[in-house]
View (cartoon, rainbow, N blue to C red):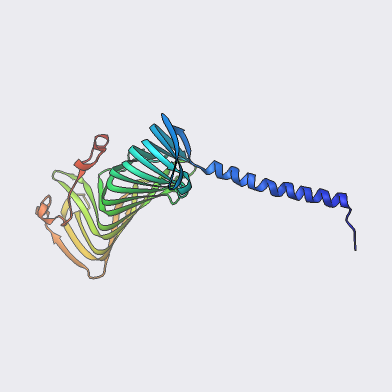
Length: 308
């Protein structure tokens, strides 16, 4: 059996212990780097409560969590609970969006913020605006949820429902993220101003219980799928782009396919029904789908975007 000298064994053990001792320090450093950072506050106070120690900050409060910036009038940071209570003029923003509320919570371990009270938001490039009664910003999953009477506007298009989910994806080498999918749950409705008709202004409409809208480049629609009690009303044109009537269709599922942002095919399946209106009905509100209402006047950012 080969013998190992005592000095060599001692050196090996010391090297092993040194390497082991370095590991907790490295992990602690990584954890510190991931913690939310308080960038600014006019006043900082500390204390102890039932939930442990807390930090109260007041006046021009700014937190930083990676690419997310949180600003508000005041906040209480409960470090043990990984929770920050936010109050007054809250703004959560990153490189792509900004969302506003009156009261909220931010969970630092989940990178998730919940906002209530006059919730409204926009993409920083002004491509989408929206509002709801409540919102959840989930940075870890690249999602924004709008709850309770949610509605959003994109150029000359409007979407609404009980819940609207926006999913983001990275836009190439840029740090900016674009919306690649919108889901609408409950009373899902989509309305789009017909760009070929300005007098009268008419709207193509599609509704159902659930809707999925897919986009590229954050703005061009590539497809719309509506399921459960799906209905569609759209305006027809001939080869010379002259109005030729209005079509109504309903079914279990309606799929709309777009090319370069322009509708080129519609597929209706399951319990299909249809109706054709003559051109004389163009602009007649009696043929609109039951849930249609153009609500641009509710857009909290309407002065930044001119819509019909």
